[in-house]
View (cartoon, helix red, strand yellow):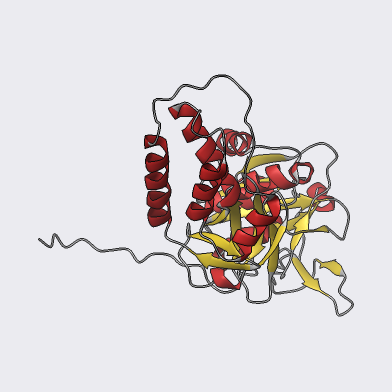
Length: 333
């Protein structure tokens, strides 16, 4: 029966979009879905090509074949492994362990590597390891399940392509390079956003010392509706690459306005050229400069990083508390 419900199309990874790669061994990393891009995933830092991510749905599961990612059906693979576990545990399932240490594996390391190179499936390899373990039959049912789960995790390496959000990006930074985000966990980040009352249609002041994570999380909350003033010291702000991981839209990118701290003492001043907005642009030499007399605001192709020693803060900002020269985009009074 058709109830007139609209089926939402599954969102897929586009070319050039950034993804969060969560491997089965608990390691996370960030990468770009492009045919020429590579990333090191997993605890061993396996280098893989990320071109296979293009056109696949978000949340898809992949297995590593050499340096290529191969899409796999998670449900079918899990069902095969569960069936294997039930079959192996059913054999001598009620046997109690005599408490002796594990007597070893009949298969040598070279034989295991040859089986992997020959293209053996993970469930087949785990079954051979269980049959070649001389102490497997002496294990209890619980010990057998634990052994199979450990070998399954070891030889069945998989990667999940997650959509970059404030939570996933923060967790990826926390696992890989926590010093870049001042060791902030995603639960602490959510508390900061809630205490600052960050929501759509508001104006926010941000001072970020977390590689753009705070700025990106605030922009995600606003969703392109509102303004964020990112204050930085000096005339030339240092680069921030954290916001690019979020795959922001044009509206979300334009909501982030970068302002030098030296303008704070002139917020309440009224000038004749108050209609002219603040503008940042790239010079031909590649250096970043500030020009407060250009008539048109230009969104840069890079982000900025604010260096504040041992501090990152974020505050709500009302319309009356900010000088119009900073936030207006050239419209008339």
